[in-house]
Length: 398
Image (cartoon, rainbow, N blue to C red; front, side, top):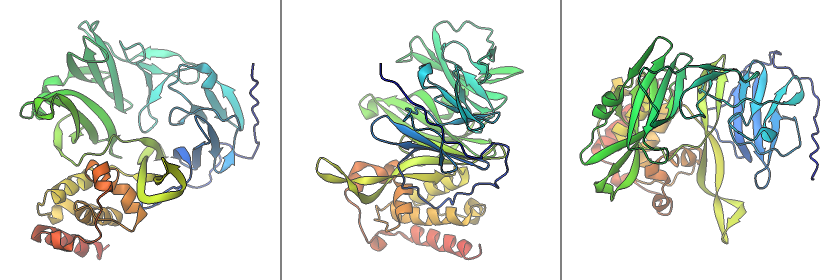
């Protein structure tokens, strides 16, 4: 049997020492070979790729082990303990780090985006609140009706509000899906509310996928999957914004299935996500089938529903108003202004804008990537020009 040696590098770090908050510019890229990146108050946690199915873990740039453990999920912090592979059922992969020590643990759980709730639905019947340290569970869902023909999944919006999704009469394919908002005091079915809100011609809603929550927990970015003869019975996923009562707020540009590789959380509040993306610039160190591949990067992404709705409006050649964009930060105005060029497949020299717009289906699809253009001025409409002018007027005042 092959022996595994764990080498722990000891350094003076405890989770209660105040280093000052770790800042991360929102218009920056991380080109290092990082699989997961978490910033939690003063901690920067990085899980590096190293060959096939191997990772090395660093905290504040210091290595904590050299086992090359396979890390299958985003690291989770709970009561000054860092958990790796919290969703895995393979207990040999589960390590917990605290006070410069590595230990094993045996709980299985997932968490909401702000690390405020820890839960499990692996039995596909109910949702349980989990204590990650002890592994003890407490029943969260409590339905009056029988759900024996349904397999469940779900997510927490905050500590006391969960969306529970019932895939009924099948796990791989649902004959029908039910949606519930569940709090400690109430279980409310919102299936019809969601279906009526998302009704589209000759299309059938099959499921929702939770992508992002706004920092104030008021708005959700959801992927909505349809099956339709219009698409040759092919499933198509589009993006929508809902409020936390599951009322649709509006359509937004479709993000390719988002690869969330971390978050920045300060004082238990989500600041922004880290997403995996690519640049158009090729990586001269990597070849695939004889050709240089795109650079893989990590990009900060802050879900702002007002920015997303303004981008959708500008993309569809509608006039923006001061009301649409008055709350946007300067870097968000830059994204919105450059979106007008990106919609005509402009080839950005900025690798930040390459990576940012490659998150979106309209710009990041393979066909678009192969047909970038360096001049789109003759394609700009009068509406485009008016929108650019308005954005620039607000930018100079910030």
